[in-house]
Image (cartoon, rainbow, N blue to C red; front, side, top):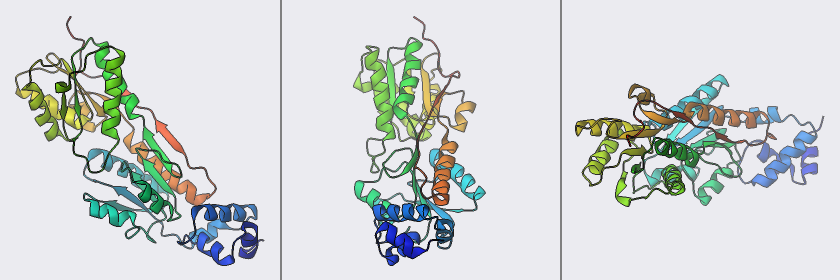
Length: 331
């Protein structure tokens, strides 16, 4: 059986470099590491033994928030898959930029985890390079990036489906409840869902009036306040697309508080598939949130089992769930 010397000769590196690469240590760039792994597999070198001896049997999950419905459900799905594989989940959350800097500079990740799952936090190029230099598998949820496994939905397509549903019911005066205008994390979801909304209005030659857009913060309370703001403006719309279910549920409460009825006076559609959407009888675009976490964790596990495994890039479908918060408008 081939040894570390033969692997080093085939890969064209020193035995010390092979040792560092197979132990997941720093100072080995990703291209060299992959060449060493390919050489080891070609020579039937026992990679599983080499990797297992240095593993932490834990995977880090990076999220900006943990109490938010979306993040907690992705984490739940990932934790279930990791637990089944005998791995622990180490959660790294941050609400301030200083915490983000410490995290992506390896001060919290280095030598502690065998892989990383990043949930909907779009890292900068420098942050991506920093993570990739760790030499461990990375899976992204809610976005795609070269060199990482990824699981996401098409937010533009989902928003298009939601908006087209309102158009198909005869609505022409449609409002939008989008995310906060102040976003230090630069999330792509609010922009993508807004883009899908605008595309459908343009394709159906419906006039867009900027005063019909209000900003929530993807929470029920912010959604209620945003709807209060919208209802105080002239020319009330007949329908609204809310970029999240929580904002939509808050909007429904505000409409009723103003003495109006949903959907008779205003149709409301959300996005996410929140558990409360069913109890609120809310029409929504459902996304498979827990499955996204499970698939991200599974991609990490597969890469740890087989270093030569391809990194999947998966886009999952969304589903329109029609309930009683939307109806055909009376002509």
